Image 1: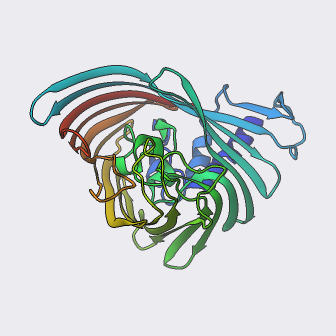
Image 2: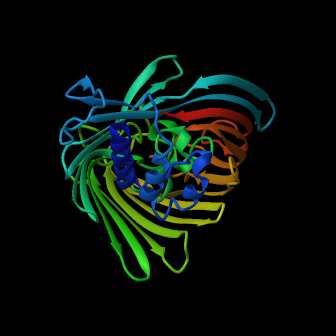
Image 3: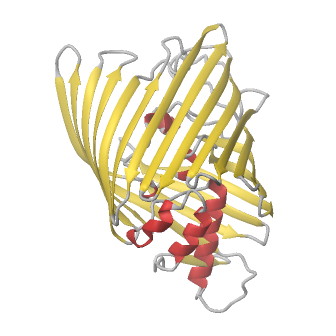
Length: 408
């Protein structure tokens, strides 16, 4: 009884915190089709076949014997994700010259810790042990959230969370098992991977929902530390400016068009000066504004995801600059198999001092996902990327990737 009860609570929290729509195993393909409309209902259905011996409940720091104990005592639930991947890449440089690389790679160990402290207050932590190029495992606390649920339609959260940009960043977190494809679109890559957006925010999140006869509305308002002098790392314990970043994201689901969700968002920040040329381009204080647009649609086995982001930097004695990024992904799910096609691109202005080292990239990826066992997926993907380098020669990249991703 206890594993089911507390895993259900964990699933409800994750769905509420991030509107997370994980790719489910084959047993519940139909539930995934309706995930955009009710991720909580999907997770409840999925619970019937999700009993893993590796899920451990702790009570007061000791292993729970799963008896009929005091249900009012807070318990800690642990779950997570991992993956192993193989990549082969062929790179052709403009003007001549090619390189070939292939390697197995161990993905990060992504751990979720969750506890329902009382009827109103809950806690969520996502910590990743991620290997780096030096062969060392680096620990990153990616999310740490304390949440107070005022009622079913409104809650307040504090800590470090994934910013409410569009759909992908709220639905697919660090576990590769969650997303259909291998990897994130370039514009939504994490800060230490060269993405354009502040993927993580440290501060406060106000989340609300409202339903009318014709629409289901949802809104997130975030107030937190802004960007640092360079895009990475996020400002976790300091903020280089007195003001705080503000991020607002709104979504609407028209009931007349089942499966459709549209959203818009706006982010405002002030970036502090950078005087250290070893970390990035030297610049003065910058004003930053980001506008986002999303459209997601699910019809039977078809799923379409589309998002676009427009980033403006100005001030600080530098010329105004506009950069952008977008992606479109179409997938078709049939039983255990999900073929997909994704196109994504980023364009960085030559005058953008904040993104001076980032390349322009256009990528088309074709792949298939096969859910061959409970909480296990095999993904195969081939992609072509046209790179317009910020420095050095332009190139074309062909990449073949295979990945075994899993949850536990």
